[in-house]
Length: 247
Image 1: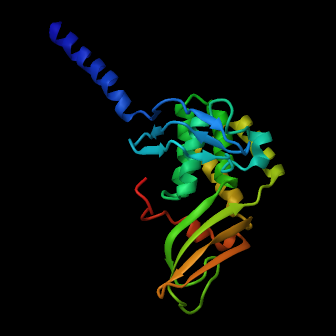
Image 2: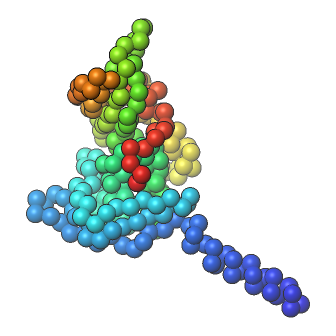
Image 3: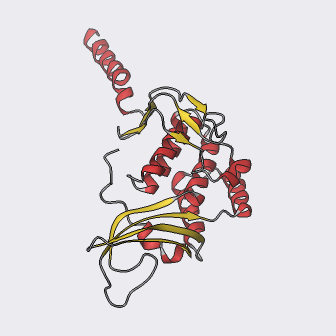
């Protein structure tokens, strides 16, 4: 009886002590203040999120954001990132959308996980997640290419290193329809991602593409043009192999 009790107590202690190490959580609540322009908010203390894999996501003190990684035209539908319990997750998301040091899909998924960890209801978190996955920024960082991004070359061209940001144009009617579907069906995360990917890539969605090309001789060329996701699909779906920064 004593041995069974000790065994059971050991299991309970292991669960209690071990849980914080593996559970996703924040270091605390974000402390922010609105800056003089009336648009941006400044973080007054470091804010850290640890995801379910134990990876650290740091938003440094002094970081300023306007929350635009959730397109402002969608705020009336999905909500403002500076209200309710979205603030912590939104700040982490904005930092890594700015850094572009981790794959865009990982950054957007961590936004969802951070909302869940902070008590946002699953359906609301899925609505916000769909909004950033479908309409939020995507990026390519230091990608070696022999063709201009978005074009196909029959013959290999000049080798270049490409970094680019892709911003989809917002379709309010599509967004409202997606919200209604999520509220009605509460899809699993994999289904939600498939839904967003299909909407993003099927038929070619209009996007703004801007970035730089750096050639072997040191020449740098900037580009900023409108294109569609059909021409970018293969590059956007390739994971970011080596992050530019350690964060």
